[in-house]
Image (cartoon, rainbow, N blue to C red; front, side, top):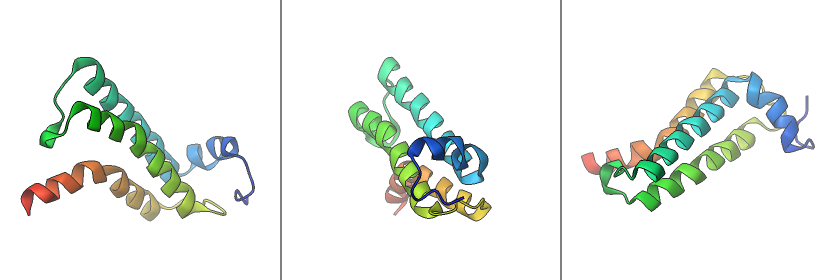
Length: 105
């Protein structure tokens, strides 16, 4: 099905729930929501020296960025792809991987 002229709710009902890439987007949203709530309610210091406000803003915005990457990668047909899911998994882990890389190099 061509999703390029469909609403966002059609994406939620269709490929977001039925493709590996969509599962990665949903898992990313869940993990970042939990992390944002933990940082916000329990005032836990985020790793790698970030402030609580910066960590919460990343936890709010990053799932939206991953969703945009999902749409950009999947338009028009959103065919299931494990390679695409691995790519989105890498993109969703970037807020953790990039600071770790910076610390090591």
